[in-house]
Every structure is written in C-alpha cells, then in structure tokens.
Length: 344
Image 1 (tube, rainbow, N blue to C red):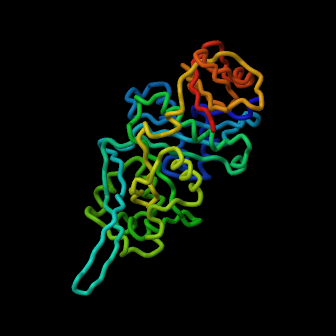
Image 2 (tube, rainbow, N blue to C red; image 1 turned 30 degrees about the vertical axis):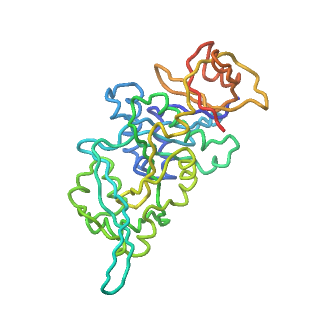
Image 3 (cartoon, rainbow, N blue to C red; image 1 turned 60 degrees about the vertical axis):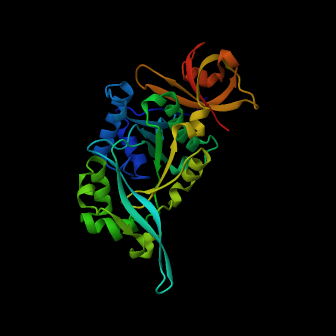
C-alpha cells in the first residue's frame, strides 16, 4: 500500500492547512483562517485554469497520510513574484570599502539598498512538514519539496526564467525579528507580524515609507547585523538542498527580517533537468534493486494533480514500469502520460 501521496490543495482542506501553517506562519502560509481560505481558492482556480494568465497563478500541494486521511505537509509555487502594483521588493546586500590616508584607517561595510522588480521571478515556498513526520523513512520532506521542481519542469513555459526561494532567518522564539526592530519598525510604525501580513496584499507602504538610497548595516545593533543573509535553524536543511541542486545566495535579503534569497535559472536546476515526461508501460512487483522516483499525473478534474514516491523501471521507448500499488492508486493504464523525477 502507498502510505503517502501528494495532490493539489482543494476547497475543504482549509482546517487541516491551518493546523499545518501553525508550524511555520510565513507570508506564503500564514496562521490565519481568512488568508488560508484565499490561498486555497487561488490555488484551486490556478489548477482549473480559471485564472487564465499563468503569471498570476499560485499552486499549493499537500502531502497526505493516506491511512489517517490527514494533511501532514505543504509546498507551493508562486508563478511570478513581482508585477505592476505589487513589486518584488528586497534589499541588495553590497560590500563597500572605505579608506582614509589622513588617519590610515580602513573599513569594510555591509550596505543595504532597497530594490524593486516589476517582472520578478517564480517563487517556491510554503514548505512545511509536520514535526512527527520529519524522520520518516519514506523521505516525506524530499517528496513535498521535490514536487515543486517536477511541476516546474512539466510546465516550464508558464514560469519565469529565474526561480527564487526566500529562506527564514534566525528569529526569536516569539517570532521577533532583530532586523525589523532595528530598522523597519522605525519607518513603518508596525510590528513585524503586522507588516508581514499587510505586505502579502499591499506593498505600497514599503515603497512609500522605506528610505531610498543605502543603509549602512554597521550603524545597526549587532544582533540585527548578525541575521542579515543568515539562514535560521528551521531552514538550514532547505539551504543545503537548494545549493545541491543549483541555487546560490543572490546577495539579496528580505527587507523585513534579513532572510536570504537564493536563486537559480530554470535551466540550472538539477531537479528540473532530471524530470521528464514519460508514459506508463506496465505494473510490476517491486524488487529491492528498483530505483525510486516521484511519479505524477495531471488530471482534467479534481484533484487535478497526484504524485507518489514509488519504485520504477525505465523501459526506454516503452516508458516506465511502475510498482503495482502506485499503478493502482494513480489509476494508470498502458500509455498513461506520466511525469517522472528519479530520486537519488
């Protein structure tokens, strides 16, 4: 029996998604009932094609414990972050050197400069796995993370050339951001949480109130300087994965909390390159030597998209033979279209 599967988020998933969101509470997946409802609705209309402009779509994937019929993880893709009216906003992190011959003093400064993009990147985010499932032998974190790259590969033409991942920085246990307290609060007069929520829908206040020009990080408190471009403990594993598959630190950070932005061109991402469209050949009884792959099918109606991790055999021109339990779950038949991402 296949114990876990991934599908598109559907109306009715909101209560379970809210429970998962409490373990991250990010801009992409906030711990807020109304926001979760809007996110699920937007994703549903993206999968159905009701949102006709691909750049305006957001896709949310959920990981299901099939025995308990329980959502235990999520991830998402924002087709384009940064458009007219809602720019992608960041701080460029620059190095600057100063030297005075008069007093023979040399200084190295980290400088922040706010930037805006109105034709921004595709963003991957919203990655959450419930704590009790993180050590599962089925590599559930790999499943819910990799499914985004499989989907990008399947619909490359609908996404931007640059792909972005924003990582959480070190935060205090109560969610306090040292950079926000030292910088953003003085310009916006809001708490970090308030500004974070508002920025999801309206970024005008950032452009209107944040200073133009450069900000010298050296004038900020040391605890604020220390988080700029640093990855928090909860996302260090994500950073390792991103670096391994072709992403790199872009020397850009979130203007609120200083979390690092990692980017890669679509053609640089190993998991995208490894994914290919195939077809189902036949069901098989899995053997110990069979390679595992993330196998997905796209459907014309709900749930629109389903994926499982299962043993496969590459049969060349005939397509892929698939473990019989996955074959049954995905309702495959000979020549059914597949999207396959082999797992190392």
